Image (tube, rainbow, N blue to C red; front, side):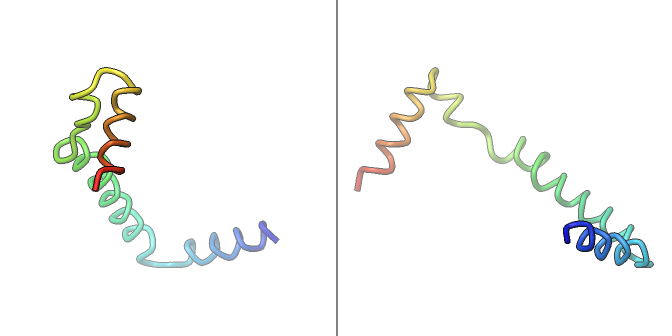
Length: 67
């Protein structure tokens, strides 16, 4: 069953004419979204402001439970 599903998708992607360039574009966009943007726009504030995991978890718990 799993092999049939794999072969279905494998044959479908192999026979596409625009499939490879589109997958390349998708992979480049995912790389930019998850690696480049994360590094520059989403810094790890908890790691910067707190020294241990216990301090980080206490801060998160406090922020979630306070109204």
